[in-house]
Image 1 (cartoon, one colour):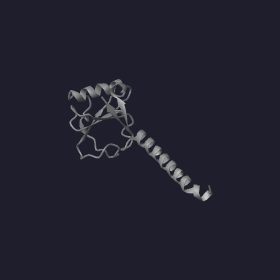
Image 2: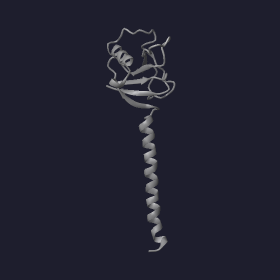
Image 3: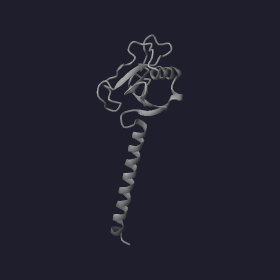
Length: 133
């Protein structure tokens, strides 16, 4: 068999290998960051105790300890799926030792008491993890 008769097979294998490498890279980025920024998931049981308490308040419609709880979250960072303004609301997750509201929040999409679209951030909206119940 001559070299020229093997080249298409080698090129084909190389092309397939390249496709697989690109697919693996894309899958790893999407798996780590999700389609909309860092939206990996976190189970309710993995949330800090304060976040679990805030989630309980959200489910029971309050009362909330911070005046800004339940206000519109604008998604200016565009890390969450695009929705009309007013779709997302935010709630403070108490940070022990913090003199202000701290950086931790739960952001809810839709009707807060019934929504299954819940996101947790512990770095003031730099990243989000979707909460699994």
